[in-house]
Image (tube, rainbow, N blue to C red; front, side, top):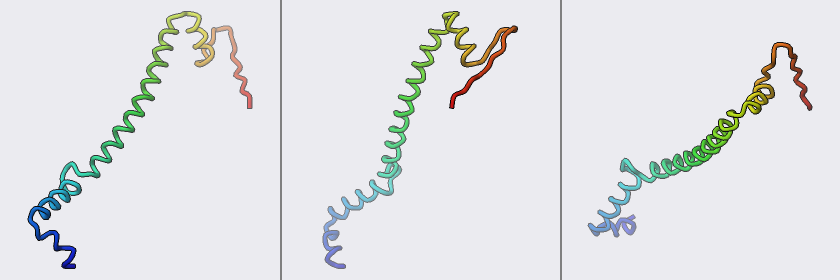
Length: 94
């Protein structure tokens, strides 16, 4: 046991080792906090990319909705809107 504690008799090595242990484990910004923050940043970047794709799709749909024919097609096919004298039959394939 004494041979393991021998390097810590030097005050510089002891001070540096206490400083390193404090900064790695005990400080407010320790190594575990830094790793978890980096993971959160990576997840947020992925979600940002997904949201930007959805935004571009939405902008495309908004530009297409200005056309009256496309708007009627969208309402009939996706929302199942109908005229007063029409019946709508939904056919599904398995």
